[in-house]
Amino acid sequence: MRNAPSYGVRGRRNFTNTGVRVTASTFGKARIGTYAEKANGHITVESAAERLVAHLLCIDPRVRSFKPQPFTVDLVERRLLYSRTEITEARKMRQALRGHIEYTPDFATVQIDGLQCAYEVKTEGYEGDTIYQDKIDCAREIIEAHGISLCTAVVPEDERHPLLVNIQLLKPALTRAHEYLTTDLIDQVERYCASGPVLQRNLCADIQISPGMIPPLLVIGVLQADLVRHRIQGSLELSPAFGDLSHLCLIEELLS
Image: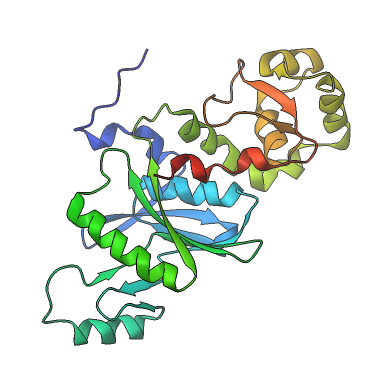
């Protein structure tokens, strides 16, 4: 059995580096590149926690599009700045001021129903002190005055958390599902599960499919499961989804 992760040794959080392209650092912050079709291709984020949230947004059926660091909140003038020119000019005007004068959310989404949401991403145990929380509260008031909600997503520190493990399988499956799955295979799975929940190991053994087919079947809504509390493995209980993708709406599980 693996030892519990050390809170003092950041390099041991190996889940953060799987499939990640680490690019040049900027002002002391690590830059991580990943691909997100809903964000128009390759994006750069500043932490593994942000990468996880980006992948959750990729598979969330309610999200039409999203963008990292979408705007900056001017906490002094109480406005949103969308362009580099606006940000530069605002900083020149406020250069003599001290304290919290601006804030940039990590992501903003546009939902399929048109609603807009912004997200602050933190790792469990590193949510920030009361002064930082005051800054977030001030920014939230301004952002929500513009019709955008602001939520804080707290990513579990434990690399063995089912959500962290599962997203590494679900995100790649999203883009390749229709290459792997045939109509005949889907029909077989639906017939096998027609009578109720089954264990993954029994499904794979009885109809002779690879466990690697389970993530694609989950992301296209053939199967559903509790992906927050249980890993995608032999003991996972699977049920027919009948096209429902609500089991992929996972971001709420991180909101504080």
